[in-house]
Length: 382
Ligand SMILES: [Zn+2]
Ligand SMILES: [Zn+2]
Image 1 (tube, protein in one colour):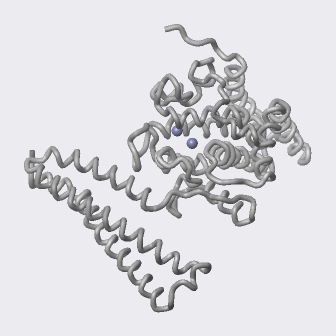
Image 2 (spheres, protein in one colour):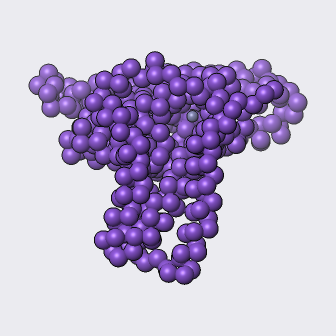
Image 3 (cartoon, helix red, strand yellow):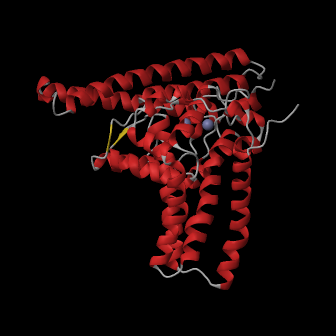
């Protein structure tokens, strides 16, 4: 099959910049050296670009998981140009298509089904049909004046942020070249590849915790270098949640950043998926995987029956817990406080605690059933 024509601008840009970064950065380091200030510029600009893409391009503009103050949107627009990942309109349009047609090799612009290389950066280097510009899915973003402004002045912003800013930061410290090499070149190459890992590795390695409808995986290791975007199976399942790592201990700096902005009044309407929906999705996946394994046992019917009973009971405990939780939170909330007497509130609190405890016990039994499969299988060989 004839390959689509090469996009020479992108090909030269994305092959020459790593080449220069791999040669010029170490050469200058060996001949002149870099100091803490210059590495500081590198780290700060890495974070600036990374966060502008994850919190801005991705969770704000592509998915609208929260609303942001114009000042924040302006900073993201600058950071996105610094990351050189195209303007918001192109990025969000591609990304929305990625979610709508995930793994469809003809429509998903960076479909993982076409291999690691294609989904990582190959898709940018040729004029593929799946990557054709089509802004029909970002009409809402075209109404954002900051998005329009960035689209109009994109090239100037790219030059300003990638050469002007690092050169200025270097100049202030007495070494323009070091500023451009670390804050410009090395930072650019690394921040781009970090983002691309989410399209490649996060669709290949990791767990399908919430759904196997797409190739997206949860990969906590990847979250460490992608500002929290490694929980990609969760993200594809619940794309309108501003979080990717949902547990408090999940490493998701983008989530913490958005929450901090909300605390300062710079972000609002942070959307979260309800715990019961999340938990149900996870439970369904566990049930399906376990059922597949149990089906191979000699007395499969008996074990499948047990599995199903536990699954149904756990789902019902989950439902009860969610209802009691809702009532207790309402009774606790200051606006609705007057509706309940002190005695009623105590009752609601205790019912919630009871439901929580019952759910905990049910969960323990469920996990025992899932984790002890090997000993069950040994006792009931196929
Ligand atoms: Zn997304
Ligand atoms: Zn994806």
